[in-house]
Image 1 (tube, one colour):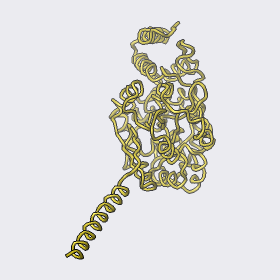
Image 2: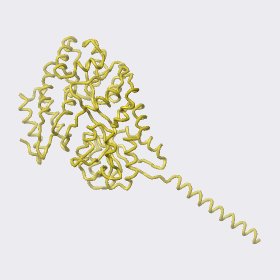
Image 3: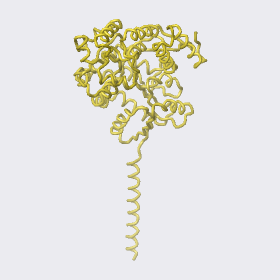
Image 4: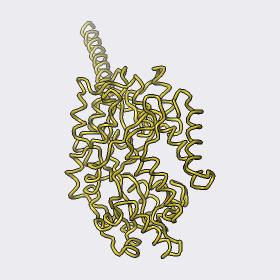
Length: 424
């Protein structure tokens, strides 16, 4: 009887130990470190998937917020410091405003020492990543130098060549583009324009300013912007640009139709503008250098300075910007030009695009990226750019009698919207 009782108790104890051991093992297997990331772009999903594959003990909670609401939500949580993500993506348009909020981690300090990463990047990206005091507040993972995307069939017909070097030589200043545009418009009976919109001039010139919109609390209109007004007025009067609204339906349709010879766009224009809107024109495109080097867009990763997961956050940021294996896979599978010029240069000799007629597009953009100037920024730039664009459109459409009248109206509106600024 006692032996039976002993064996029964032993079996029960062993069973309980087994169950508890199983629970402990199950808990340890499923318990992961968690990282919260906010983004406005679905391209982050690819990086997160690859990061989790590489780090199976880390779970990334990726929250996608539409761009219309993203920035305001991000600013709100940073200000009140509640529900702030460990990492957040910021588009270049809003980066000057966000990086000055005192809630972003200082990445220049140890253990990050982000300058070591910056040394691998194009200079213009390095300058954007730093705040007014020269402290690194975020990391850019995307390289965005620009090019004049051109229709090979149109340049062959009207310029006699579709060779990228020869085309680049033909459009290396605005006077040449103006002359080509006027001639092409006449020869095509108004069916073909050299440029799609005045925005093709604006994206180039605005990358070459020497002063941002606001300096020391005062509105500044850089001389480059004034020169741009003359250029876009000339382009409109000589029928050089097609008067399309950038990103509008006529603008996107023109790419498939072949009614515009040149579009000034950044690296990401290849997959997200031209391949997307004109898939049937593969092989009919090329890249040329224009009058000046320029860039457009870009996205930055920043870390909350009171995050409880700084080590994990930094691992993700390093992975996205410096991991050679991931970066090469991203570049080759997504046609993604990187901020890391060392990896770009390594890939340049072998990466070609059939859409671009077999052109070595990484090779082209590495050269272009080295020439991009570092355009200064202020936290007011995005809002004032919007006011400027409205005034320029009105000016081109004849709603102002002169450039001087347009500028006075612009200054008045800036002063109304930003009373804290000095406006002469």
